[in-house]
Image (cartoon, rainbow, N blue to C red; front, side):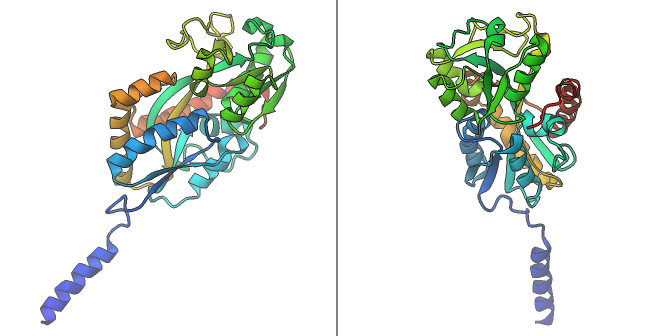
Length: 313
């Protein structure tokens, strides 16, 4: 009897000592989106949430935390427990741009995150209200103001870079995401909007918004009539926004591996590839380590333009 009790006690002790993530996931997973509902990051997060939920066997909840150029949501994620239940829909603004635009950035984009998986990349679009009298990008100096998805966002950055490259002034009007900016752009409250193309494709195709240029070297297959900034003689405006999934630093390797495997399968799914193509997103398969290196590289790549522009959110 004593031997049996001892064996049983050791077994129970072993179970109690097992890592908390041994059966991960055991409860719903939250994906923090650093911009408001209806914007590019929100659309991507909702596109992957259902297939990710099916792959992991737990609900995946999208939680919008906009503000301060995406850094409010980023701060919440780095402060979360490293247990795999709080993740972030990564994008260029809070990770690669934030170090140069946010004074005293409250986190290190490389050391304080676990960058799990890359999902895809999308261009930025420079857009106008069709009735604003802005026919081409060359008319931009006529504009008094432009809107973006938020202070320090990639749209804000491209707008400031355009001002510098074309040597003119226009006021920045920040919004809490691409969706409210689109509403005002369509209404004519602002004449020009600059943001990731993803959320605006349907409005451009319906003629509610006029696309002046995309910030890529080649034209978007979705908008073959819209010129690139390179074609228009402004190669310094080339910019792409990446999307990925990250979590707090020190996530357990088995959790990272499980998430990375599930996300790689999702972005390889023909249905997701097609959905992303409709959103002007090119899917990208990349290892966790390569994604982390990309974040670090982009911080360095953005440095010259952002230091020169001296942009603050």
